[in-house]
Image (cartoon, rainbow, N blue to C red):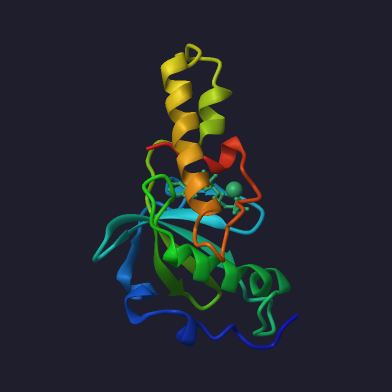
Length: 167
Ligand SMILES: Nc1ncnc2c1ncn2[C@@H]1O[C@H](COP(=O)(O)OP(=O)(O)OP(=O)(O)O)[C@@H](O)[C@H]1O
Ligand SMILES: [Mg+2]
């Protein structure tokens, strides 16, 4: 366990820092958008941005320490994410710090996961034109990451249908 929070002040430009009061949460069950290995994602209302998704990562371990997991993910995820600007990559607006967790403030993507769409047996198989469009848009996002700068090429490393969100 680390004993100090990563220095967010030096990492973040002022417009990317949010506080808890900037957000209204709705129904805590209904507004849980999903979760993964490291985070719970909730839909919230932000006073400036409107509907957003906030990816909340618990950091409080009971002893006022940052957990190893957060320490590992945070600087990378925040620093890189804030500088990305592509229509096929979820936009990251900034960071909010709550007493026991911190959140990445993201555009809210309303269409759910690709995983849910391709495993839903109650709907007809997707037409090829839709499959091609989804594939094309994923490729455009990855291409952007792979050519981010000449020096920094970003590899997503976890491409899977759960991580593809539909607009
Ligand atoms: N911006 C968003 N808008 C709507 N739903 C979202 C958004 N971000 C995440 N979700 C939902 O929450 C789920 C988990 O989010 P995410 O994949 O970012 O977390 P994770 O799995 O813990 O992280 P990672 O995939 O980077 O390991 C997604 O699969 C999706 O269903
Ligand atoms: Mg995920």
